[in-house]
Image (cartoon, rainbow, N blue to C red):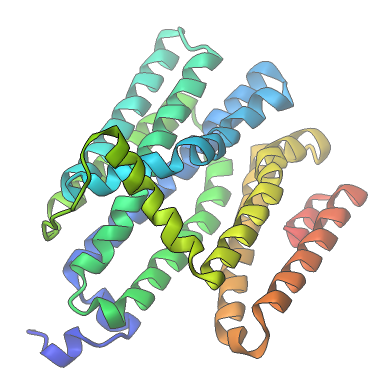
Length: 328
């Protein structure tokens, strides 16, 4: 049935889901997101079992933080300068290739931890090229971005969290039941499906005004920072977001170690803890979205810090899987 103009410009979730290009992008993102969860769990758990070193396992989730800290802005600038459709397709294909090479090394018995670190590093770099391009593409494929961008982003975020909720729970079981190379091939397949889905999306070509040379590249990189910090609310959110990410990074890094060495719950326990994090993110997003205007931003930050701090104190004080899930 042909949509009317009013229906297309409607900002309801239902109308967003009737946009073919957005639906294809959404499905591709969800499939690749599920594969990313499997990849992270499998490689981290393999390193932990192989080396029995908490530090060696912690290096895997730390790599994206290092990339973001030192290369996040240059990679975002590079992403902004390249054609978006080709960039999305090729970053997905390259990530699939990295996973296949890693799986073949597993099968041949030539795998060493350095290969896993290198693969995670490459995949993190490709991810930081892919994500800014996706954020640029979303408003480009919406008929009325001024009204539809917010619900479209909400659908993407809530769907991603739902995939995390299910993915970590199922991933913990899969890591325990099937071989690491099989998980790597599944991961590669998810990104091939994602790249194929992008082929069928019509993405308008936008002309990017870019300054030439290394100095021009540096000026382009600094423009985004200047814009963000010229607005007090954005600057406040960025600073607090950085604090939260910095403080919360060890939590994600040591979750598998806590599940394995303290709770003795194995990969299934790790999956359940990560699923609990995702479930909490969904509930928190819904609550903050509904009651956002009832409290100031400062009070929301205070409440979140108090609840998070209390939960983190309870987890080591009472090392029990069910208590840890509730605190997560």
